[in-house]
Image (tube, rainbow, N blue to C red; front, top):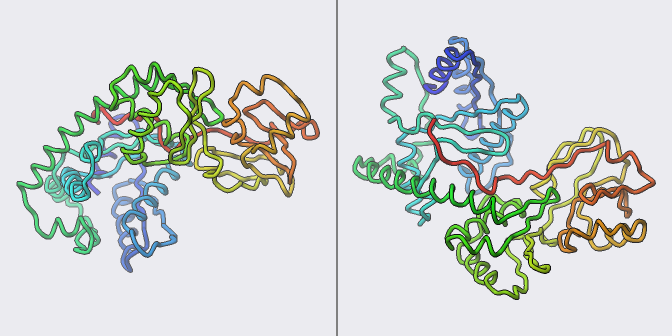
Length: 398
């Protein structure tokens, strides 16, 4: 509530606009009424407001994590659809301290203990937390000063949840120590992210077909801990993962790459293969997601990595799926173009391809179009968009 009022005032001074968005998770009987109350309060302040509803499905366990993922998905989808770049969320200093304590209980690493960043670049939005240094009490006092009511979410006081247990036994010294930990770890993370971005820019080459080429010499020239971060991020990008593989698995991969005769490796849905002096990170065929049926008006994501949209009906059996070895044999039989072989075979066979029944219609990243369907390339768009950047911007001040 405080964030909405302050953001509206700031935007007005800078000739900008804001819209407030409430996500109703539907987890409590009163949530819909509360969302409408927030809408009425904000509209009284001439702040436009939207209510987004989570329709489930609701998991039997891990409901808070699922609700959090759904909340960010709904918010970012709304921003993308409305061409809004900046998404502001109201996390404050007490939230930050509690996040650190929860992650300490879960034996989180240093990156996790850095907790929430004030600025975070995501695929569709720039996420901002402008109140992260403000204590909750100061926000309450601000609302009281302008005679604005608010609603406390009772879910945060549920002692069955980690955050509720912390609030049931407040400890100012513990919270202060947690904030110190967060600041120290955040400073370390900023430096590590900057070093990761620098090394990734020099050691990795990205192909729009969804694979990465690694320059091992450059990768190994960096500090091992930074090199392992780059490796983890590359694997995450290729596999469409939001979370890094376990550190011991990345360490084993790092050791394997030090071998001049690197024999290859699989990790987290990826294959790493050596071809001459290069090492490629490709999608593992066994981990590829289900095909996407291609009908007019289709917009979606294939294999958690490629956004696809279709403007014209391509046929009742048209679908987007991996090329596969059999698909590659079809292409070679029709058009043995040697330029297509520049992409390593392991990456070639998992490229996104348009199929019509058992026949390959097009493989955009090979420049291949079946002569029987010459217009197909104009009827769809396909773009590699991993859920997270290899070197995201997590530093800076709001």
